[in-house]
Length: 406
Picture: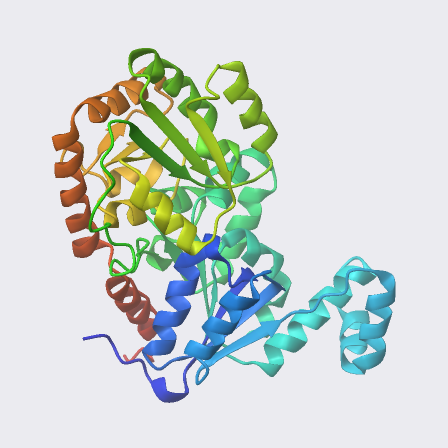
């Protein structure tokens, strides 16, 4: 039984994201759809529309009674900015009276303020802390409670590489009502930065295990297929993975690694594949849509995550639900998902030798792959189901909306 929020028939929950809907952020799609199905009015404020009209139409059709999409429609050049001001005199007045340092910044703030004012919500949930920092000047005008999610990059990387980020996060944590962390590791990180512990709650990622389910039958073959998916960035540790694969193919030539995704490091990764002589053993599949991802999972024997940091990798949860044995680094929150040699395999972060040894262990032992895969799906069904995650969000929202009595 899920929690019924105060005044739930008219309750509005605002979800603030950069792009929506995006296949690469299925965790947000699932959350939005789940809240809509539970009867809440959900308003998604998005900086830009994702270029997937079919997915958007599907989302709107399935949740037409209580899903609203709000495009911030920010001007991208001086002509658009002038047009915006002429069409919206109230925005012009607000822009000229705001404290932002530049006219462009004033216009952006005024437009965002207008859209928030015309779509008031009881809860505003910023799904990324980096995005929430952009909206800090407008927090004073939001009448609902404010929640921010901390997922990894902004807190683990930007706080190290950008001198101002720690101070920005501290300002953010002081102004929000709740701080959502995707793992206990992330909770420790944000508390270390300055988040008040009483504001922090952990709600681990979740998936729809009925969608990510194993193939009934697999093609019989002697080769072993390894699969990874993720943005081509340093976080994903693909160079480390390639160095491990170089060791693997020296001992077992009948193995192939498919990597799906795209990003700024694609050219670099292509060069490494060639330079390490792995052209016959590694394929870059490019960006893929939801059904292609399912097919790649179903064709795989092992899922591989060489990442150097993660909050908790949603793709690992999906792989485990697909009954795939996972070989993962023990970075950040991944230790909270996988139990070594029970429902997956962990190797020390950055340890290429241990990475290769773990892969070779599973490549050689088909029965172990099967056993770990079965237990992996059980773990997902028991601890990472979407309904559990929605229950936690509802509970936290309930606490914010319930008046405190003496």
